[in-house]
Length: 451
Image (cartoon, rainbow, N blue to C red; front, side, top):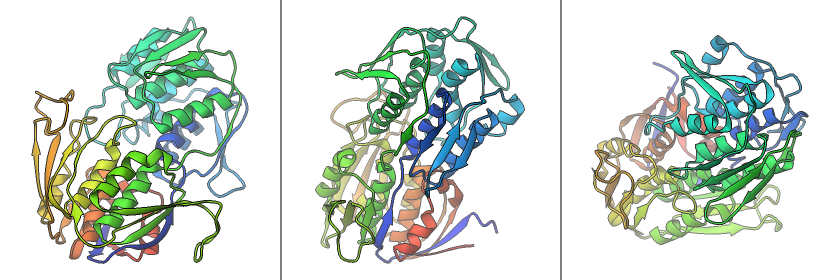
């Protein structure tokens, strides 16, 4: 039997304290941004996750010297000798991450050409890269598609342009930012994503010497500069991981303090958490507390006892309810009394994980209709993107196969909340975005073991 299997002995509340580091969705992009500088960059509080290793490998292939700094979680990236990498070498990483598409702009600026292999990532919808390519062409790139990937050149350099996103996509916004900062002239991006990780990436680029203005109504303006230098940056904490542990506390009727979690970027989640019946306390970083190592602040989440209440939710782009929050929370909603509704408007194929929950005793029905206040772009299309969760349901152990990163952590929460011993297959996928999740489970008193 593969060692990619975890036996989870469920049915016991999780109690204790864990810590989250820098946000996965910022750290990997900040690492790519280091390519744009002409001096070394230092990134702090970097989680030891698979996505970081992938980007570290890709940077190394392109001549960036990446080393561990003096502090735990510190990365030093020296882009002094950026060079071309062979398509065969890059293809080793194809399928393991969608990050390579974001290398296009920085490599075009540094080398004048780039190669991007076929892209991987979690299978939760097609997430087309058409806009990435269209935007790069508007900047002046020439894109040649081949069976093994895409070859890009910029014989006349890259120039600022006006773009408008059909949907405020995080990835497309990152692409424009990483390309526009050194493109000649002004770039105006309309209908941009404004997630906290996007704003933090803008902070990184500004530290490097970029000139970026965030206007109202999702408009970002970038004045290109000829050169950028390295940065020193501590990223915002991972709000997805923090919410995942919060949902685990609720589903298992436990109490988890998530050190490093910040209230400001989680306000939408915290409102929903409280509406369901969960309790939380924001702890101040400046006040020492009994039994706590150091004085780092965070958020303590707990189930106060009694019944949880059903809610109706729609995922949305920031400042709405984040799509990556819904899978862990749906597990907790199986324990709430009444009918809860989850309308997924960001990814059209993100509710497949509910079949596994039903096999454990949950009662979840998925629908093609928009079960929300307003129709979304998936309405009238053949996507089951709304779910009705009837509860409370007594969950029992089952054999589970992890389909993608966030659904995988949700399956893990379900196994922890269920009576009996579940076998969870493919758990190494969770390492893509959750640092040392097995160590954290142990710290919370969970009984899990590799098979």
